Each structure stands twice: as C-alpha cells, then as structure tokens.
Image (cartoon, each protein chain N blue to C red):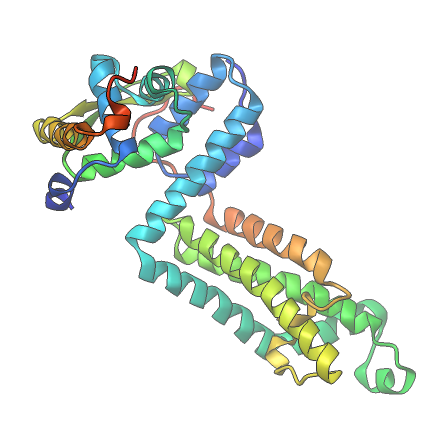
Length: 114
Length: 218
C-alpha cells in the first residue's frame, strides 16, 4: 500500500486534504481541515470523507497522526492531529508538477483569472 | 453543551467507523451551532464511507456475509418456517391445517407466516452482525442484498404469475416470497430493511473505540 501510494498521483480530493493539512499546520485535526477546504477551495465536504482520505493517506505513509488530549466539549473525545510526512510533501510536489505541465500550452486557459 | 440527536449518535456508535476523533469533531461542530440536519448528514456520510472502505478492504468477507445471511434465512425458513407459522396460528387462533382445507380459512396461517418471515429476516441480520461485529459494512452489505433481491423477486414473480397463472415456488422460498407477494410486498419492502437494520444494530451493540480515554462523554 505504502509503495503504491507514493508511486501514483494524488486524486484531487487527496491533494486538497494534503494542502489543507499543510496550511493549517499545528492545528490540523478534522474540523479545521474540513473548514479550510470549504473556505479556501469552496468545496463542501463531510468529516467522514475527510477522515476516509486521511486514513488512506496515513496507510500510504503520506501523513502521520497523533492523539491530543480528551476534552469535555468534544464529549470526552480526543482530537487527532495530522502531519504531512516528507514522503507526503514529495507526493504533493509530484502531483503539482504534473498539473502545471498539463496546464501549460493550453490557449483557452491563457491569461484567465484564477 | 448541546445534546446531539440521540438516534444519530446511536447510528454513529453502532454502524459508524470506530473513531473517537471523528465523533469528537462532530460533537464540537454541533456544540458550535451546526443544525440537526447537518449532524445527520455527517453521520450518514461517515457510515457510508466507512462501509465503502470496509467492503473495498475485504470484498470476500462482504460476499461471505451476504451468503451467510441468506443461508441462515433460507435454512431457517426451510427447516422451521412452516412448522413455526402453523404452530403460531394454532396457539393464537386455534387454527389447524386439516380443517383449513375444508373451510378455506387460511388467514391465521398467512398472518403467522408474515410474522415468521419478519422474524427470519431479523434473525439472519442478527447472525451477520454478530459474526462480523467489527465491520458494520457487512451488515449493510447484507441489507443492500435484501433491498435488491426483494424487489427483483417481486417483479419476477409478478411476471411469472401473470403469464402462467401460477408458478411452483420451492417451499423454503415461500417465506421470503410471501413478503414480496402483492398482498404484502409493499409493507415488506419497507419493513424488511428496517427490521434487518434494527436487528443488526442491536446485535452489534456498542463497540468502544480503542482510540482514547473519555472524560464525561456523550
């Protein structure tokens, strides 16, 4: 699983989740990650989908996670903080390069505002 | 702290992924002002995604769960269905088969057969949920197979009955078929999935996640 994940490109949602984890940094648990994707990328997501992808990325060695402390406002449940590993950063770069290479040389997309 | 919808929490605990962190995130967001509708949507999405992940990881186990559910169902109906339905009708309405042939009074048996059918579905779902306790997706896979099979059986039987005015149904299938036949199938299609899910949820029980310690949890 680990090798397979590092060989292939990230899907669009995996990439969004990875970028959200990188953006949120030290506070990267489910809620801020989902909010970041919704606010910055404008994509509505469910926490179940975010965790599904995070579990897959963790199995592939692209992110790692650690549990925080349990708090009463979360019904006594701990936060699970995520961190992008070095292999994860490489994977994001690889996917970014592939997208940029595909982007170049398309007349319809030239000069368009992003 | 706002109390989240109890039914949604029960579904999450019993059918959802065994992740305290996800449950905690949902509770945190709900406490911050999210609606009940939002909460239900999140829970159903979490259950669905967990099921998809489990089936992808263990496709053979999903097939085995479906096969086991249907085996229990059909074996139970073949070996016990007729006797149980007849016995139930005899106890409740003093009905007996011999006089039914003469009087044509079959409704006590039919009513008992419907009850036995539903009990059979509940039992098979219970067995699936107990055997595959750690993976709720297997119960959902069985439920989906029931959802697909019953309407399909109903349609096929309707066509066969209309074309030839009758078709020989193997006796063991009678109880499966009885809930799909025209005089019951509308209720069966609604009730069977509900019974399968409820029975499975009860059988599965609450599995505590090994994730983390809890303090004053919901």
